[in-house]
Length: 224
Image (cartoon, rainbow, N blue to C red; front, side, top):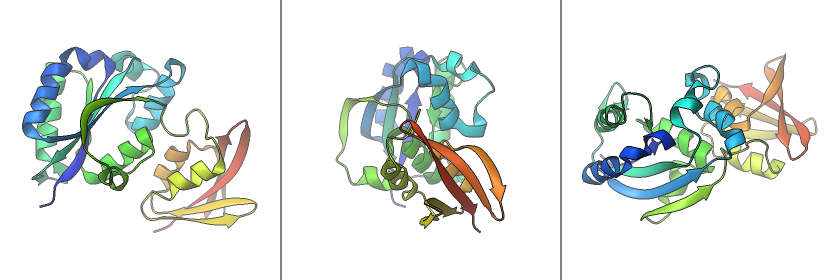
């Protein structure tokens, strides 16, 4: 089986055990890239909410657990991934061990399948697994001071379209001085765009997204 890329995150409050975790990652996987990620404190809770989606506990409980300081993102290759019920066994085992090592909470996050990895990388860096695979390995930590993509707002419509085009089973068409996005992953599109205030048209949901200082209508249609 071909090697696969995965993501481990050591949240700020778990970094007191980073040395031990990093050493174990190097034993079990090929370290591809490491990022020292910094989010703006005012946007931290919103970034977590978008990153985790429906999995996030209500309110700001998650931010209090993770801390709001810099965290480490490790991109690693599993050279021989083995799966149970669609999840990578080695990754799940390591995540469980690292969480125990950091006190039994959720101070370590890990993706455990290809879809999960692709989504997480897109939210964090605006790049897919395929994008990263075109890059060179770099075992030295790189600083990355940027919020989750599109947070708190998008820079321009071109940035929006560039990210949406990276989503699987998704296509874009011009529609009513805006765009309609046809996707099998309509909920993911909505989360990626940080789309708000929707109402339903026949077969289509209309949303607004923040671009610069303006609001832009966007249309999303779920297709089978």
